[in-house]
Length: 379
Image (cartoon, rainbow, N blue to C red; front, side):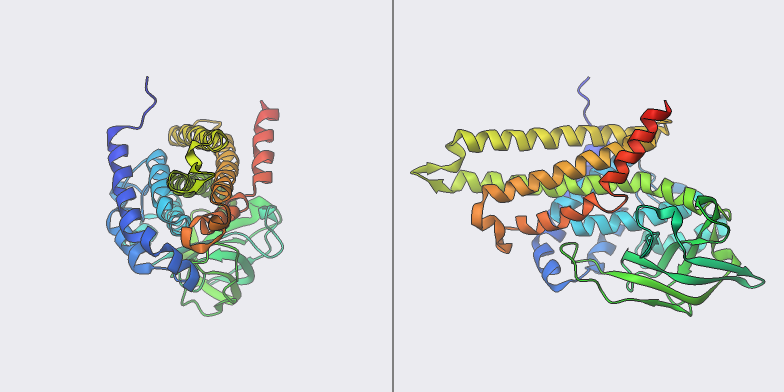
């Protein structure tokens, strides 16, 4: 067995890579500097089926596998990790509506989400609850007309631009069992946004607080069952962790390729840097680490597709290992370029900045270790 990707998946990879090279990479540095989210480019990606990669075909999506999605997000991240990651979040929300919503919600929400005429954000983290997500305090109080929300969500990608906010809020008692998921439109009275955060990376996508002050939504805003929201949120994050790992992989591969080109051309002590054994060993290690990370990511995605009992554990392993590896390889690539790597012109410093947050979001890599250890000790 060659353990290679199916032909259809390889073709999908080439399509996504072509899009990344032509529509994303040439503009990524400018988008970062201008803090600009290119909605038109996202809609063009959606026209290729990339806004609903694993939404079912009968719901209007592409009906692809999690392995397919990992390949797509790696390829798009080769152009810009920030743009690929933003598209990943939108895909996660679309999938959650398809998976846990009812027919009316799918009919109302998915058509415009799959074209990215409307954009979606995922709202779980709060100022006082990050890793301890089940301790969230945003409350959705039920009355005869629906739900009234009060609370604040923190670090929300797309906040202020997105049209729909999939929000985890407390409808019951303490703990995970008291959390429900609600679909909140942008024009909801009582919904507002904080200032756009000034960040180390991911500058091409806005990050703001989402603030609910007596924000009223109808009863049919509830996604799935009351009290099941935390379970839905964690199911979404299994795939989200694979996707963010894929984004790290794509960014790191781009950094390695930039470094390879540089060391072939840059001369020192009378010969190209590529002729020095120290350079060759470093490049060999970087390429090996990325290939191992890619292989494990694909294995974890296959387990999530198969819904194996240990899929969540494998997703956590992949997220931890691949994002750590991607960040390390990008930093090594910057070092190979020396002072030039520190300049914006070469593109690597942006990749290093963008990949750093991947070890924090979708569950910190420390929390990934907690998930992995729980699985091991439960066996």
